[in-house]
Length: 317
Image (cartoon, rainbow, N blue to C red; front, top):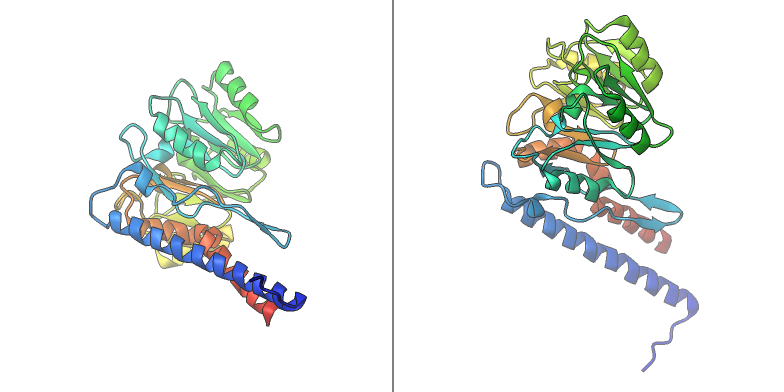
């Protein structure tokens, strides 16, 4: 028997069906996330990488002219048994650099999560693999130490988007990633950084530069990490300093750790505006802080479903 409905009733019936379909998907996502959290309890054994990776690839939903996309969770991984993944990678909103080496798993995880949106590039700097500690960059540019070879520089320039400026820097404090932390709008630098280097940072990265310390540490790139969405700083940062830094950077900040209590945030974490990667030892509690402060959960499919449900209910009212 064929169901015959007036045009208006049929339209409402289809819209309700569509809403229930997305609610079912949301329930399935929540159940999957709960199961994965149970597999990786705080202090318990760490499951295999395939179990603790993001619960699904990037989700694309086009509706009413809007595009929602983003990773559902921060991803945990290692580089050749090291949890200091920020030492071996550099992530921005327009590119990702990863170290050369035998850890193909490391590269493939970045590629799986990011390659649809930004280039993921194997590279070395000055013959070393510590690419995250000797470089600093954002969506506009990348600064590398003067010891970078011509061949390495050419490879990086050829691999990055044309709009990204790559420049060598003559600086006594050559571990730029330890001495500078930056997003697309502002940068904090080591108090002893050369004035010329400060000007290059401002010019190439297109940011406002401030000389600062984090909890008394001059290595701001080691003890903090920021994106355009938010930032994490050394756990011993006082409330007053936290408020001052937050006002200076114009982003929300939180004092926290990664890798089961490590305060070297720049070494244990990399993130951009929609994805984050942490060392394999990072606990579930630390992961939740990362997801919250960098606003990764705002792009989760479950939240997208809630938005769709609200708009559909409003349209049916």
